[in-house]
Structure formats: C-alpha cells, structure tokens
Image 1 (tube, one colour):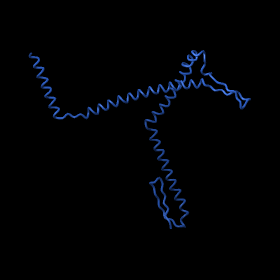
Image 2 (cartoon, one colour; image 1 turned 30 degrees about the vertical axis):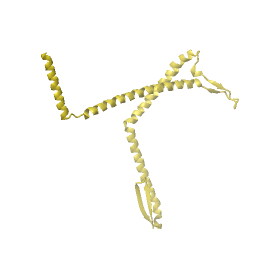
Image 3 (tube, one colour; image 1 turned 180 degrees about the horizontal axis):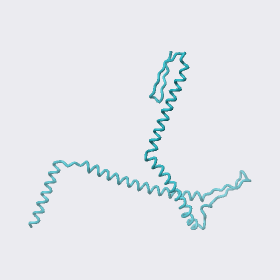
Image 4 (cartoon, one colour; image 1 turned 90 degrees about the vertical axis):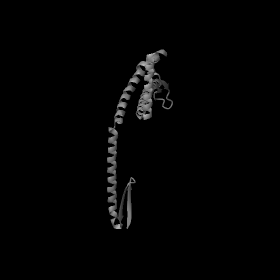
Length: 189
C-alpha cells in the first residue's frame, strides 16, 4: 500500500491510498483532477479578462489608439503634401518621394537594380519628429495640469487640518479690540 499526493497550484492537495490492485483507478482520478483544475483556470482567466476589459482604462486606450491612428494619417499628409514639396522647391525642385539610389545588381545581373528610397525615409523621419513634438507638448500640458491639481488638493488638505485653539481665538479677539480702540482714538483727534 502507498499514498499518492497531488498538488496543484500549491494550494490544492489530494491524498489517495492505493494498493497494486487499484492502480487502474489512478489514471482516472488524475484526469478528473486535471480537468477540474483546467476548468477552474479557464473560468478565472475569463473572469479576470472581463474585469480588465470593462475597466475605463481599456476603453480609454482603445479610443487613444483610434485617435492616434487618425493623428498619424494627418501628420503623414502634412509632411508628404505640405512640408516636403516647398522644401524640395527650395533645394532646387527635388521631389522627396522620388529620391532614390539605384544599385546595380552584381549577384543576379539579369534582375533590375536594387532601389533604395531614401526620400520616403526622410519624409518618415519628419513625420516622426512632428508626432514626437506634439506628444511632448501634450504630456507637458498634462503634467502641468496634474501639478495644479496636486497643489489645490494639498492646499485644501492643509486648510482643513488647521484647528484654531482657544488661545488663538482669545489672541484674535484682543487684536480686534485693540484695532477697534486705535481706530476710535484716531477719529477723536
């Protein structure tokens, strides 16, 4: 007779006593335990994913991706259609989209030459710089708003934490009385 222990995820432990005649039931019970564990893991995964997907941050992320894609298309059009044509005109009538280097194909001489389109690469770099600058400005503005909100919150907390003691109240009354007497004294002169 011997004891078999099953440990799943370090928190479930099953112990069964088997002798040599009952070893046929061992495979069946192990299969049931593994199936129950798989079912529990699948259910937990689905539950966790549902919680994750229904949180606001995931929806915000999806909206951000859509807006980011649209912003990328606008910036790409800005670079391709507005910035690089005048820049090419200043450089002597150069069309950036058609700037290429043709390299002769030495390995396969019957094939056409290899074309390196560095003009499109320059346009992509310009688009990247514009997007990076826009994101920098947006993040800078958001950080500024966070600082303002933090200062307001800190001021509100410190204003709420100030407690006026009896001694301070008496001193304020004395100050007010003295201020009242001095104003009366100046009016009689």
